[in-house]
Length: 320
Image (cartoon, rainbow, N blue to C red; front, side, top):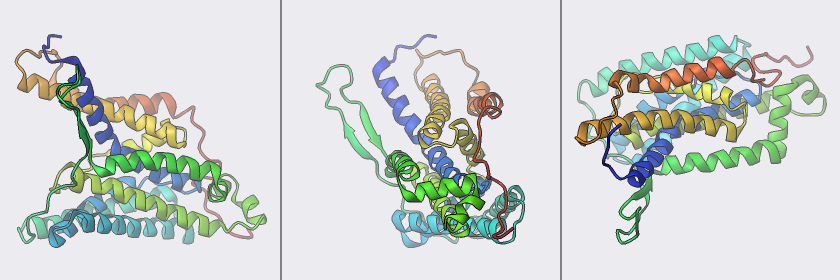
């Protein structure tokens, strides 16, 4: 490897990029965390994110406001989550099937309306993306002077929500009840916990988080929408949840690992293309598939050792 780029700015940019790429994975995994801790399998994270990304893009274009776009993105994901909750809880549909239905529905709806609205150029130009928050180190400071420590708001919010989720799940009565209905709903019911209410509520909370994750793609990362632009990030978020053993800090660490793989891919490609002295000797195709290879290796190595909530995926019937 030959590269004359300063090491510290490279590392700083890699850290910032890692936090950015980890944002939708962290939020998506938190969505799965609240759902599965309450006993509802949610493989619909991908569909929820894709729906939120499209609705957020359309809403921001029509309203010329990224904040309104964010609001509608979250509402869209919550509505899709409500469908998943209704099928899984009320009608006891197999939760894997229900999640698959949501994913297929999201792909179909967003693809159709994208061709109708965006393809026909009937939407006004979007207002752009969220402004980054942070600071630039003064240039007179040694080594790191001139480096940017700036992140968009959703990336910062994702980190905050990890700590909030940790506190809520393990230090509040809500968290205790959520974990109770995910481990043994019959026992939870006998002590007066409304199993149905807790499961519905946590699936909708998960939908809110997935809406934020979806908004990242069209309101924070870029200001355009493309069919299937989530590109499997919802499933990688699910892998992060499993790798993190259904714990907020664990899933965040996994999301950072996956985010680092993607950030390294982009950063190395950028340096190889823009700086003649940087020759890493890594094939571009290998860099592109690196995050997905890492996902497969992590799931293959960890999934058998992770123990999910005892009642996850099991429909509950009161008085059964």
